[in-house]
Image 1: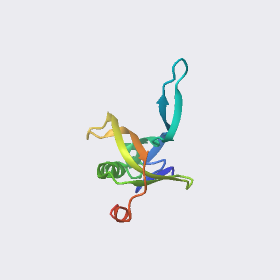
Image 2: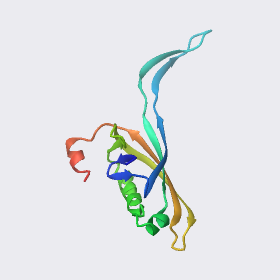
Image 3: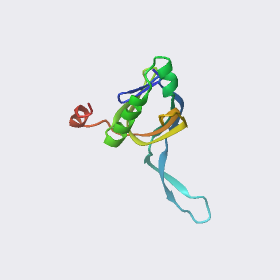
Image 4: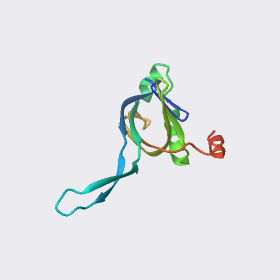
Length: 141
């Protein structure tokens, strides 16, 4: 396993992760100073998030007896549209925390005769959030 996002498992196949971008920031109030550089007052931490870039090759996987990954693609859409926090964990077991899926961009290339891309790339943007409430956690299933 490379990564786990909710109930979607990213492995080498059928859904492999190519890249992960991690972004985080701090927040500052800017105070202009006459004749000098502005002063920056730290006001807290800013948003934290990840961009996960993954690739599916449904036709290749099907020829080699591996799940096509199209089910996982449908799961991502449902999770994104639900807006519910999901647990993100790296493949070595390190918990990355709770996230919401902000955006998924799906690109299908080299379409087969059935209209399914032979190569489907995904850009999945997730943002760190608080753990769901007790009631919210049990409604995730």
